[in-house]
Image (cartoon, rainbow, N blue to C red; front, side):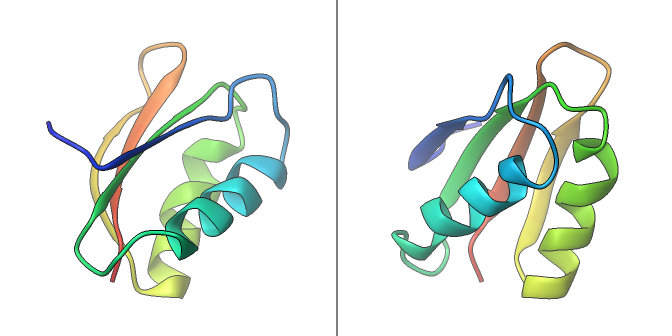
Length: 75
């Protein structure tokens, strides 16, 4: 999948991956896509919840691999 920005949140624990994603998404325009890598087990729950609360689209989530990969489209 193509994306417009990248965020490596590996090594960060809750809530830092989501806080960093929020900051990175603020710099993007509506419709652009952020690829986020994370290895925090809580991210599996936190990232989808964050997207739902903020109105962003979680296009893809690969939580079986390490690090986990998320593709988030800004609303």
